[in-house]
Length: 286
Image 1: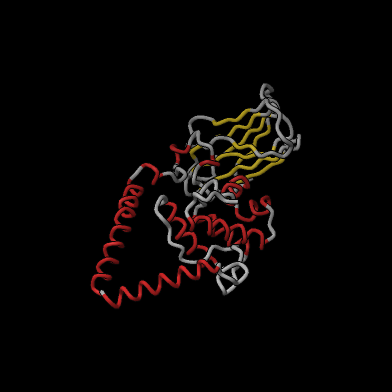
Image 2 (image 1 turned 135 degrees about the vertical axis):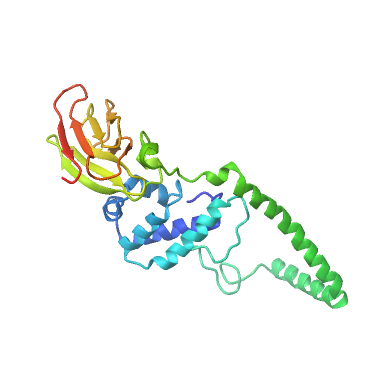
């Protein structure tokens, strides 16, 4: 169940993305391999915890072998609604996966009698008023529309210029990426440029985002007390992660990001024990 406070078009988009994943029969792990986008990122996108970037939607369409055109149109509408959230969204089309109603109006094809009577009386009264006083009726309708649209325009302008309009995930590049968590940035075009399985079974991957020109290492350690280190030519300081707390078997961890304009120079070193000098190192491209 998605939060009702989300813009309508955003909820429609999430419903489409979930349907594409279900139709493709890909698990989150398989989706991670097929799109080069982390499993945790997909979990946030599919549960409306983070607005999905355009490249993630394109990657899902390719993985599901469907045309991108309709889904990207939905993304553009959701993106516009997300940027101006707080305004009332017009239901341009029915919400997907909603229970279908019968042609009669209610879920069982019958409108309540009281509703039909009220609508009939309202239509008769409106028709009489329009015939008797057409100019006055037209002026009243215009004044009512103006009164309804003016507050909406003020709210729209305030959300376009207010601080909440910039609530999208941050985008960084080179040195501005250093020390950041790769899972909380908009660098969602990473590719695996090196991988190795350590002697103790820990799987390691060097990741590089060409758009952000930053790299990091992600791993699946088999025990606690390890240390992972990533270095590059552009990053002066080494970025490390150490863990002494118990972890669930197979849980993914990542280092912080480091500036990396190219694959060349990216290097990972793995220490099975944080206080032990033994290490296993490999370069990107291997």
